[in-house]
Structures are given as C-alpha cells and as structure tokens.
Image 1 (cartoon, rainbow, N blue to C red):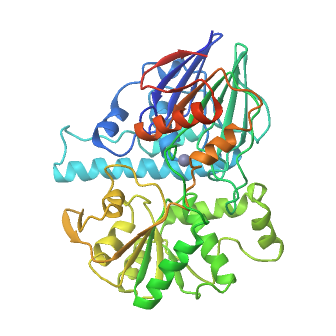
Image 2 (cartoon, rainbow, N blue to C red):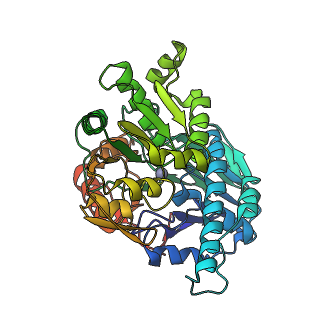
Image 3 (cartoon, rainbow, N blue to C red):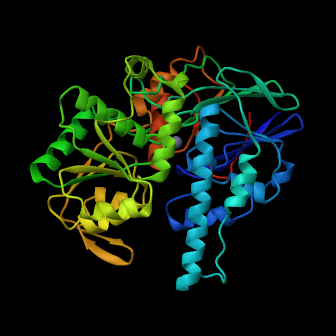
Length: 458
Ligand SMILES: [Zn+2]
C-alpha cells in the first residue's frame, strides 16, 4: 500500500513537501522552501529523509516559493528526474527560482560582509546555477492531460484558480488515488477561473491557509478605492506591498477596472519590481487561463493589466527616482509581506509621513514586518533602523488568492463521495484545526490534521 509522508506544510503554511511512495515509485509532491520564523527557515538546511537522487519525479502545484523554492537545492543535492507542472507554472517558475537564488546569494554575501553569521563563511542554500539546473528538469503538462511521472503512476493537473498555472494534483499510485488541492483559489475573482471540481479521491490533502475564517463580503475593490481616495485627499503615496506573481497582476487588473468604471482617477501607477514586470508579461501571454471578463477586455482591444498612466520601474535607478515622487501616486512593489525587496526602501522613507497610505492585500505570516504593521506596530525595524509609523495602514483580506473556509467547503462539496481520509495541510495550527472541525461538522467526513513528519498509508 502506498505511503505518504508529510515533510513540510504540516502545522505551518510553508515548506510544502509530501513524499508519496508506492509500487516501487517515489514521488515528491511539491518542493517548497520554509519561510518566516527562524526555526522554520533553519529547516531548509536539514537534509531530507530521502536521498534526492532516489526520487523518480517531482509534481508541482504552482510556482510560489513555499511550494517550489527548494527545487534548486534538490537539484544541487543530486535530483535529476523530471519536474512536472502546468505550462503557466513552468513560465513563472523561471522567474521565481532565479529570484530566489539571487536572494540567497545576496543574503550570504551580506552576512559575510557584515560578519552577521554563525557559519564562516555563510553559504547560500543554492545559487543561480542550481536554479538553472532545476529549471532544465521542468516538463510542462497541460491541464487535464494524463501523464506517467513514474512507472505504474498516473497523474493529471486541474486548474486550482489560485495564481496562473496553479493546479490541483491527482495522482494514482498502486491503484490508490491521492488528490492534493494545492493552494485553492476563489470563486468569481478576476482573471483566474474557479477551482475545478474533483469527484473522487482515496486520500485527499486539502490546504487550510484561511481554514479558520471567512473573507469579508465584497471583492476588495472597495478597499482599493478607499486607499486610492485617501492618497488623493492627502496628496500622498499609496504603497501596495504585493507578491510579484499573482497579487501584483490582480491589483493592476483591478486598478485598471476601477479607472475604466470611473471610480478612481487615473493616477500615476509605478510597478517597481523587475520580477513583477516579468510576471505580468507571463500573465498577459497565457490568455488560455484568463476568465471570460479578462478575455472580453482583450477582445475589445484593451490590455487587462495596464492602467492608464502606467510606469515600469526596472532598474535601481528608476526605483531610486521614486524617492522624489510627489503624491498622489501609487507604487506597487514586493515583497508582499515586506520581508525584503524594493518596498522596504519606500516604507523606510514614507512610513514616517502621515500623508502615506499603505495597503496590505495579502496574507501576512507570523514574524514578518507586514504582520507587525498590520497588527498596529508604531515602529518597525528596516535596514537596522527603527522607523516610526505615522502612515495609515489599511488591510484587506477580500483580495486573498486563497479560498476561505466556506470556499474550501464549496470545493469539497464537489466530491461525489467522501474520500476515505482527508488530511488538512498548509495552515497554521489554529486554521488547520478549525478546517478539520468544519469538514467533520458540515460534511461528516473522516478528517485529520496532518502532523509534521507523519507517515500514513493511502
Ligand atoms: Zn500559493
């Protein structure tokens, strides 16, 4: 009987890695990096309980680093098998992994330069060469196409609606069917289509990032409208920390939509993120994944992700020039949780200014600067400096790329019969427990919260 081992994203949201062994095959579902708190990040340095070269293949749900960011390390440590994912994921993966490698190299270099290291010399977890090695192993497979990642194993991807390319993964090994939700998107949101229904599973792995809450009513456009309104009234900057992939394109799409509807004026909008720019190009190109509304914009000659006064800020020079920018204007920059990236320079400069508005539009993990700001910190540390917070900090969860509790239940109701066992993964402990309770209560299914390191029969 095949067995599944939870090697990450169990009791936490990052580091997703699920080892599936059966019928002589050994697959890794996801290959994510741990992020956030130090004790989690330290786990990236621990060897996996399975030798990378003993793996037949990796199956990837989507390109976010908490699902894919360990791939370069896996390749560095000897993995040379195929990495299967959807075509959209393959294109985004190139952007994500090269960026992750650059961050690793920069951090190691910084630690060596400043002596801020317990190891001498500090080393990157992987470098650009390792990322290229991993990218060379990628095998894109279209949605709905069945493929054989290893002898005796069948698999297919279906759209999960979370970001471009995001997939629900179905694997059948030794006659047992495992379905993994990946990160589930939402119903009726712009650009992406709804999560595809799945009818059956022997064992189901379901994510629970927002398993303990409901997104507010509305689609988040009110929050953007309000934030833009404040920037206009204050003649200040609106800073939107946003993940370069997914959230940035959704923000641009909504800003363009609000402008078209005459709900906000056409302010100067700066996309201050080389990675965000690349990802926007990928999003625009993969029209086969766009929903009906986005297709309509394109067919009418419009550009779904391009607001009226749109500026691309590619070089560091371009970015530095924004220091002198007068409001009202909008700057979209990474990282989404303010843990790094160009948004830090803008926050350091603009947080002490009352005219500034900051709009958080995504999940803020424990231990991040974004979480501190969102929780009302009156100062935050940036580049070793205590920066007072006088800006207005606005938050919306309505723009989440993750299904909330009821949306997860809606997707689960698409099953014709209950899976034999459902394991809740990819959530902080409270969220995971809450979702288990909801699944047991609302559906009467046999449901467990996956435990870190746990090995189960499927
Ligand atoms: Zn994700």
